[in-house]
Amino acid sequence: MKFYFVSVYWPQTIDLLAKEKCNLLISYLAIKTKKIEKTKLATYPCDIFLDCGAFTAWAQGEKIDFSEYLKFVIKYQEYFEKIASLDVQPTGLKEEDFQKSAEESFKNYETMKNYVPLSKLVPTFHFGEQLTYLERYVKDKIEVIALGGIAGPKRDLTQFRRRRLDLPWLAKVFQTYPKQKFHGFGLFTKDILMNFPFYSIDSSYWTTTYRFGGLLKYDEKKKFFVGHSYRKRKGWEEILKRGPVYGSFEDIIDPKRNRISQTRERLAIRETKKYIDFITKLWETRGIVWT
Image 1 (cartoon, rainbow, N blue to C red):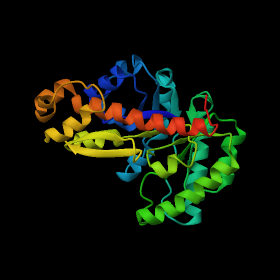
Image 2 (cartoon, rainbow, N blue to C red; image 1 turned 135 degrees about the horizontal axis):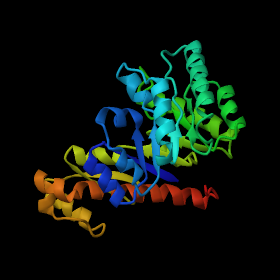
Image 3 (cartoon, one colour; image 1 turned 180 degrees about the vertical axis):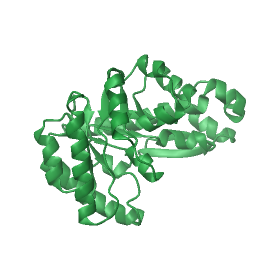
Image 4 (cartoon, rainbow, N blue to C red; image 1 turned 120 degrees about the vertical axis):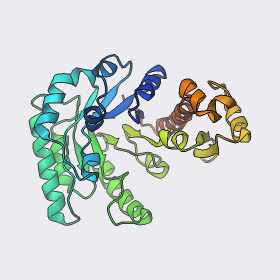
């Protein structure tokens, strides 16, 4: 399974991901607002997935200008391995809301495919939309289709109720189109990834621990992560058992030293790769090997 690290868009973080040979997902909205240097994208050593930023804009009460996004894509598409077609978020929970957003998303896709190869373009099919819309993308023989609305909150639904809705919906999608490659936006949930063979996913989970005072460790028994406080030497000793690391205990407890060594960030990258490797090998044993 292919994994794209979602960057927090600090220049030094993108530089670190480049050094660690990590695929990157970056948002058009972030490029636009953070004014990230285009040279960083042009010289990035691994694959970059350009996310249109529609969900983030919707969450902030904003809207992506389609014509501006299209102009950006046409000008810089050579920098990206995958480019998200501009999708439209449902504005409510009624059937007509999902139908309207699906139609508008497909309309944007129809325009963008005139300028972007189908091997690069990635349309998004949202949770709650009818399978007839997904069928349109499949008939176009699009290489990768993204599934949206899985990772984020479904408005007023609790996490338990969301999962009860997610799993049957995903089962229907994967059973109907078993040979289609799917990308999971913001997807990192173990029970989903162990049950559905996603071709690729992206996540910012790797950033959450080190940004808020922790050290990320992949637990071989739980097949997921446990956190350790970076202020406690015991946690650091547990991390050392996992293999060699960059920097020292002093590097992680001193903010200035950590900004230079990026020890916490490097650990998070290493442990995340272990989790992705587990999911990938799990599906290989089941006969699923995406190329």
